[in-house]
Length: 182
Image (cartoon, rainbow, N blue to C red; front, side, top):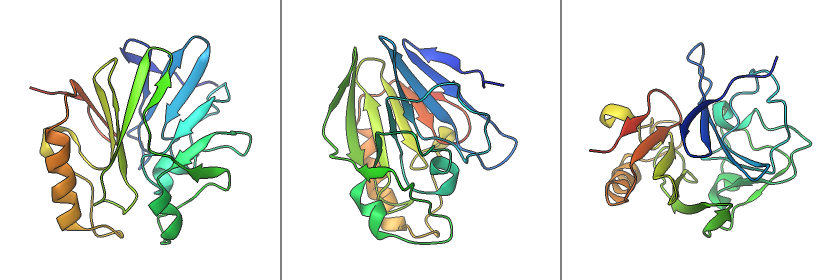
């Protein structure tokens, strides 16, 4: 059974489960092409399609274990390839992200290195929709990801200050609720 994505912005959808640690998966669909932000923990049903690209916000298993071997374009910040730990899962088909702006149809994705949760955590700002895909760097209501699993409190605080300067309209975190920026 194919999971149901919910529309949150033009060409942008979310798939969320609160039943376990699985992170939220985001889908950008444009002109018949599909891009996923994160892949979940691998326990979701098959998405029903092979994405043209999957960008992982970091390498923790609840964001990366859903990557399938047939996916050809899976990107992850280069720093994540140097880290190992019990919660890290680097898919065999993942490649280092160039971290350069990416045009995907009408969507222009800007990448921001936001270490703190992990050394290779990133956030992605869609300049078209104003959606900020924040992974486990920033959550709704001022929360943020743990720093005791290979991260750093100091780096997290620097990353959070960076995110506050960005012109996003909708916070799309890796877990929990979406939040409009006020």
